[in-house]
Image (cartoon, rainbow over all chains, first blue to last red; front, top):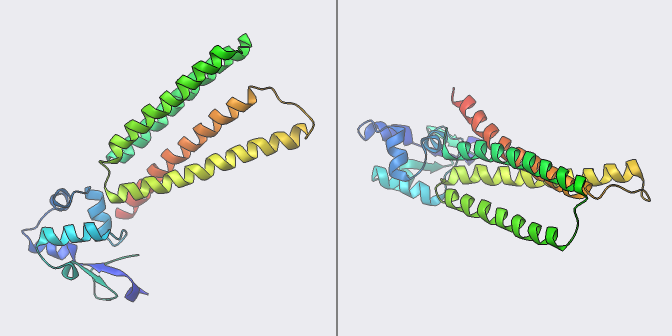
Length: 78
Length: 141
């Protein structure tokens, strides 16, 4: 079933970007820390706007942060 | 505790306080058997004014919520709407089947029903917000 879900690499990207904290990412993306926690854990699928904002913070393309239908992702969102 | 949780607690406390105040006020009006155009005019001014103040204050804080908080708030509002509808429905049906179709109820039953339904809806809305956050926090641990 996980092949139909959105996966993300936020945790890995945070650590690759100077061990950025969840709070720093939240501030940069304009959301709360709880929202970043929920996205990272795959419990909340962000809107397209927020997904782009997060990708912009890491300066990577959207598909490097979020993947659809790949089982190898870090966390899955419904 | 984030902004939405704080707002939920404040609304719960505020609505409880307002219901106690309204209950005491209506109790006094029932005791006085108040009626007439003056009371109608007062209610026409107080009701919409209170609603407008609530709406403006909510819109101000709504802009500060992020998209996930808005999603949680919308879900809670939907549940509150169901609760309000069900409460009014069953408050009406229970009286209908208790007193009978040709029976009579005191007139103060109507505003009491409305305020009680409002309290139930607000309680459900605040509780739904707090429970959703509590469940998320439980998952995180």
